[in-house]
Length: 237
Image 1: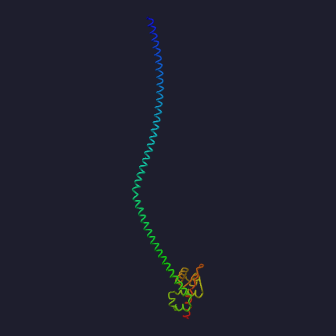
Image 2: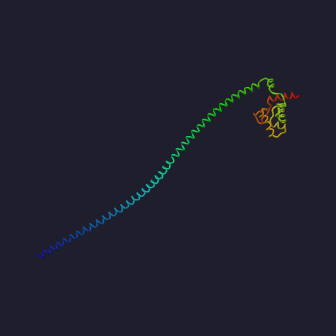
Image 3: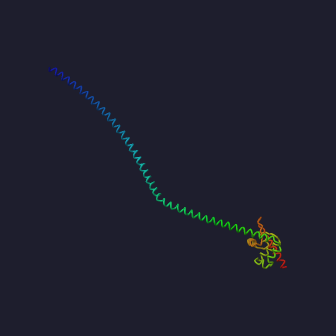
């Protein structure tokens, strides 16, 4: 009986030892699995942390852009408010420009009317001048005796405004025909400038005709003046 109990005890101890070894192996296997799982979890956590940091950096960059856009929007809103405040001033200036434009058009209308009046006056004057020219031509082509009756044949009265030099120039041109200012200068013994002024005065006063076809100009006594000079010479003789 005792042997059976011992055998049973040995068997029980053997079974218990085997179970303990098996359990120990299972514990070791579980520990290895846990360590492996822990490494996987740690890697997952590290990867998640990296992704979280990257996303945080992205969010920070987006926040910076949003802040910059918001700042630009604020500036744009301020500019819009300033422009909105300036709109009444611009409207006033536009209204003033319209008023100035209306005044300018009114002035232009007045100027246009004045121009029409000037043109009308010029046409009237041109008509009168044409009539006078026709009358002058009629007088010029009238018989010689009739013209002479109108002009007083008195040397002292007709030629009184002339100086001795001017009178001598007229008599020389009447006797010798057309001459240039340089040719007259040599005869009257005056300077070039003085002679030029003298001939210009006689021409503008109506005593001379001037041929401007070529330079120097040639001066000649007008027909009426030439007749007067010849008749006054006859009278004096």
